[in-house]
Image 1 (cartoon, rainbow, N blue to C red):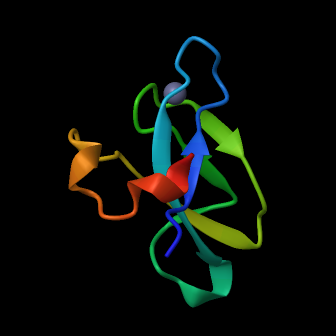
Image 2: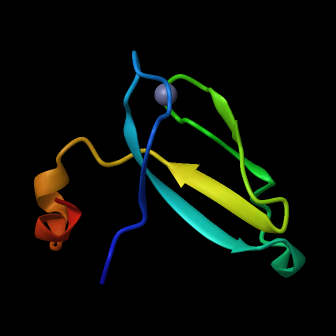
Length: 71
Ligand SMILES: [Zn+2]
């Protein structure tokens, strides 16, 4: 299993977060056509046919069984 990680485009931030993508037609309540960095709140334009849900990583990434897949 791979974790959908994204890195903030703002150099001063550089926050790495989880981002789930799905089709906009699925209506899953995500942000349509953009995503927001959960750390600095920067909005990034993306595919308008998709929805995006971003989440912070847990404080202790060691709790994740597949952390080796991130590098
Ligand atoms: Zn950021």
